[in-house]
Each structure stands twice: as structure tokens, then as C-alpha cells.
Image (cartoon, rainbow, N blue to C red; front, top):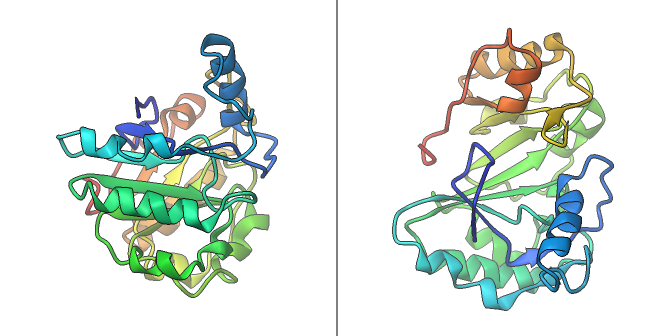
Amino acid sequence: MAKSKIEWCDLTWNPTTGCLNNCPYCYARRMMKRLVKMQPGVYPNGFEPTFHPSRLDYPGTIKKSKRIFVGSMTDLWGEGIAPEWRGQIYDACNRAPSHKFIFLTKNPRKLIYPQETLFFGLPNHFFGWTITSHADISVLTNTSPNIPRNWFINFEPLLNRVWNIPYQAADKCKWFIIGCQTSAGRPVNVPKREWVEEIIQFAQRNQIPIFIKQNLLKAIPELPRLQEFPEGLR
């Protein structure tokens, strides 16, 4: 468990680490290489998916309610992640009900493990889909029918224009996060201002809270400084 520099959460918790998605913009893989130099042994399997049962009880040691990003160094629905690992993580969340748990994936089609549906209706669990361009938009129309009660879209890094956002995003989506790619703490591959404004306009028409990350506000200072949270995460 670590205090986070990610603005929309208080802490990160990584009972699972590693990922096989091979996203070219992956910050976690770069961070892992730095951490290994500072703390040898912290990633014994490199960036291969690895389960750390000894970390499961961490949320229960934090008394004050926090927004906890679960799996900042992995994709919990990626290849190589056993559904049973997620089951144990959900159980750990259930033992610390005062916290708000935020999950994020590029593979929402894998939200099919039967045990998981028991947690989709919990008010303190938020599940996000990552969309970087219009090519990813199909995840909103071809995903699992088991849509969680609290789900959101993470447009980060926004690499290209996203248009014709389907009605599912307006119907039950609780939150939009928008950010850009960074390298060594600096914005790179900055999206066009109009791409961001289109997403903002869609969200505002449909009363969806918007959180624009500092990396994007730094790159495009003309954008409105919107850093809103949905009900349940405020």
C-alpha cells in the first residue's frame, strides 16, 4: 500500500503485479524497472503477472476511509491473471468496507467470472474501462452484459479522437477521467484540444462528472479545470 501521486485516488494497492498487455505507453513497466534498482526482490518475476497474498490484508490496516486504486501495477483482467486471484482481492475489499475501491482495465470483456458479479452492485466498488482512441470504443458495445453498478471511462492516455460515444456511456456511466501520456513527468503525444472538448461536452450534456488530470491541464492550459468526483467517491 502506498500514498499515490495519482490525483483521483489516495492510495495504490497492488496484491497483483505485472501485465502482458504490452501497451506501448505503459507507465507501470517503466516504474517497475526503476523500483527493481532501488528495492531488489520487490518484483521477483519481473513484469510477469504475480500474486502477492501477503498484501491482501493491507486495506484493513488503514482506519480512515480512503479512495484506493486496486492494481496500479497490473491489469486485473489481463492475460495471466487467475480469476481466483481476483476473488481473493474482492474478499479482502469486503473485509475493509469503509474504503472506496477503484479498479481499471483494458479488458472489460473479461468481467464474466461468476463470483465477480456479487461485487458489481457494491456502492464502494468502481470499475473503469480504459479508452485511448476511437478504435477502443467497441468495448462499450461488445462488453460483458454484467455491467457494474459504478462504472466509468478512463480516457488516458487520450491518443486520438473519440467520436460517437454510444448511449451506454450516457445511460449508466458515473465518471469520465481524461489525461495524456507522460514521459519523465512531462506530457508527450498531447491530444488536440478539440478532442478533449468533445468528450467534455458529451459528459456535460449527460451530467457525467469529469476529472481532467494535471498532466493534461499542464499541456493544454486553456481547458477548464474540472476535477469532479461521482457520488460515492467524494
